[in-house]
Image (cartoon, rainbow, N blue to C red; front, side, top):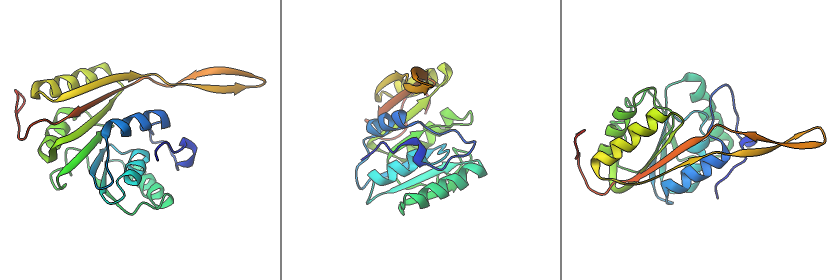
Amino acid sequence: MIGIDDNEFIRGDVPMTKQEIRVLTLAKARITADACVADIGAGTGSITVEAALLAQRGKVFAVERKLEAIELIRRNVEKFSVANVEIIRAQAPDGLNDLPELDAAIVGGTGGQLDEILSALNVKLKVGGRIVVNAVTIQNVAKTLDWFGARGWTLDACQVQITRLRHVGQLDINQALNPVWIVAAEKIRGGNTGRHG
């Protein structure tokens, strides 16, 4: 079951992937009960928690560089009683080399290291494994599509614009959230291929 209400998570000033985007991201990742998953730029840990609930017999690695976010991930992991999470404080791609073989990876924050992160994940990802990138800038969408395209990965991408109902007095209005590109790709062959190595 995925789709925990946003208000259930402990939050600070750290960005959090909203419920509707989380649901679509996790669906695109196709996480199985015994999957090994990496959540890069884990923020508050909302995706980490829901991925851990899906991968009940597996393991989720939450990679995050900000100390405040690390504490929020810890608190949310405790709140939702997910014991199959390991938190790694690192600026990705640092911290990825020590990960085991992965079935799936979800990339949120990149700290400007998108190419390096995808290259590091490529080494760790099983053939048939999936990477899902959530991007809010056109530049990161273009880089992501180029990176996957250069390697011949099968991919799909969609832009999602969520508008929620908001009550104002006795009336209801639309409240738009920032649009997000969700790019999902599946590794179809082993090793490093394509012009990026």
